[in-house]
Image (tube, rainbow, N blue to C red; front, side, top):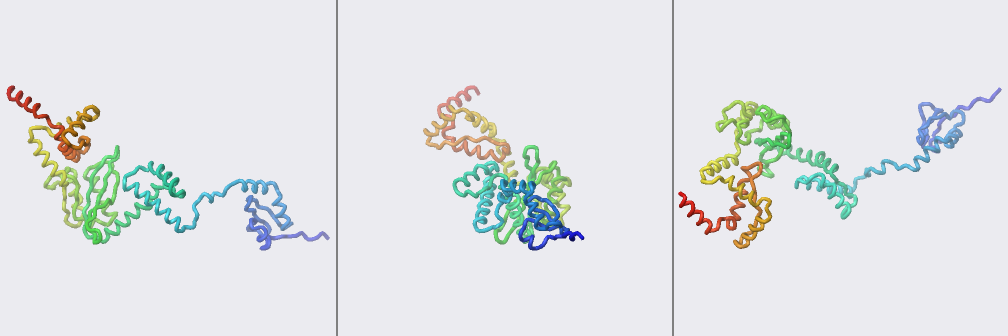
Length: 357
């Protein structure tokens, strides 16, 4: 009678001796985690395992693993101690500094390398990481803090305006509220883009912002520039403007506040139109005379020295002319002594003018 066939199983002793060998759902079958091979040990038990260790497939995987780096070696350590905390704070502060001073994310690549080379070799906060910190850490934290402050405020007012960024129409929304710790505060609550700037689009956008932050029942005033889209005239009696559309969708009385700066500018501009000279034309001509002409600028510097006046570069009006006109006028007044017409030339032209008249 032939001897009974052995039926070996994967025991606890074998698992301790070969920790990389794991059992399967069958007692007589195991898997090698080194080479991902599954084989039977029913006839030989330990001998089947040692035979597998000597096969070419297993040796090939062992050699490949010896010349390969573990991917987790390139990851940050899971342990978060004092050094890691200080480094994270430094990187967050660096990202905040870039936002506060309106630096380009591209500059972060260079600056991060300088800090890494000269101060802290573990510092790593280039453009991608800086953007992630700003969007996923600083921005949510700032909005959460603003939300908590708005929850304790009973009355708020909102400011809105449209700004073109190339072909994108941006609508920043500001909120003004009173806080017992900081007093009156004005902060950005939302910046979004819209397909246009009609009263319907703007009012719907503002209502979404109010509902998102639970401010519809707290809104008491709406502030914007004096365009017809916003207020439709001084009386604000039209029905197709942003103010009246908001007024119809809030439960309390709403106050419409126009832009005081625009009102003052329009008043001064109306008065300036009565002057015998065109102020805008004079400023642009003076600026154009010295704009890119080095010889003329050097002559002006010489006149400034003779008149004991500090030289300052002349300014021109920009795209927002009503905001840049006053600085341009003030700069000309600062340089009026060297710029003004000499007395003998002024007398000569005055006599010629009287003779011709």
